[in-house]
Length: 159
Image (cartoon, rainbow, N blue to C red; front, top):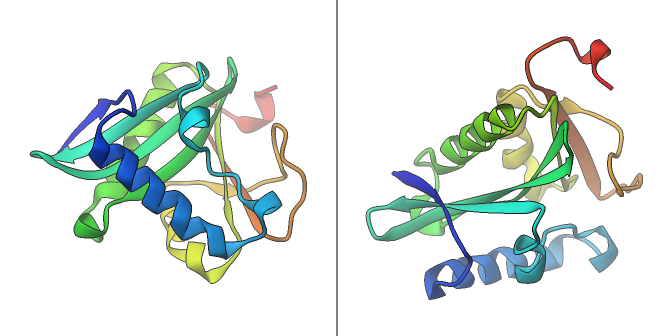
């Protein structure tokens, strides 16, 4: 499998993004859904990658810079044809590695609190993410779980 930056233009990528957003719609009220749409994923502070298995799109993920020392994982998705084949783990490791290269001290994410998101929360915990308070522009929301991972160094020394 190959992970590479993507300009969000191919029909395969756009279809998987639509599937992603459509699958989230019934999980929470609109004000509690924080997945980025096409315009949000094309913003200058967001980098978007796709996982390819030959010519098949296996998944995607994005990294948003909140500030020079803090990044946020956005919009991870595995194609249904590639579930339970390690795609999410590979993408998550790629995003952690990229955040480290960028010099982020902290990498955070928001995900849902509902049972639908339990596999994602387990995956993030396996990679060392722990619950945290809302960050950035987020506010406390019973439909959201916030998690963070400190990258290299003592979190008590980070700003």
